[in-house]
Image 1 (spheres, one colour):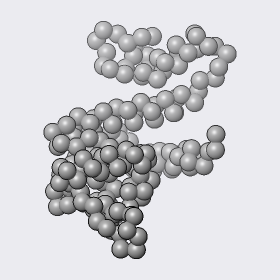
Image 2 (cartoon, rainbow, N blue to C red):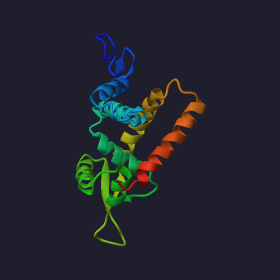
Image 3 (cartoon, rainbow, N blue to C red):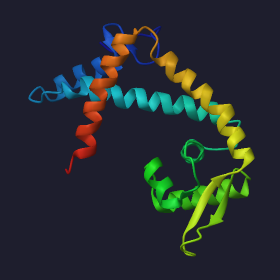
Image 4 (cartoon, rainbow, N blue to C red):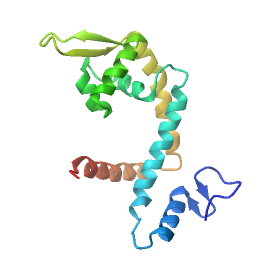
Length: 176
């Protein structure tokens, strides 16, 4: 059943948004087993909603979500990182990392350092302003994530973590 006029976004009279999507697919393509959408559709939707919340939370900080991810990768490292390491950590392209690093450098959130062993390589390091931004924003992000898990007890969270770790392993090992 589609959402009602007074339902919340993502809710339907009988189930959530993904249940509604599966019912639509059942009508359009009754020959397909859409049961993977039960899990992966929800993971995708949760991710999209969480990222939208992060975008909104960062709006006043002067950095985008991708830039915040770059700053966070540097903040959790015990040393300056090569741009290629930041690219790997953030799953962005090398060109995107360079573009965002340029902007973050101009904004005073990170600095480029020469790499002693190879003059062609540049290291990226947080400035004090960059560290202050991550220190201010990251705890709020963790709290938003915690609120998304409200209603799950410690055992349920541990089970969900273990199951998602297995799914992530399948995805990361895939060669399709």
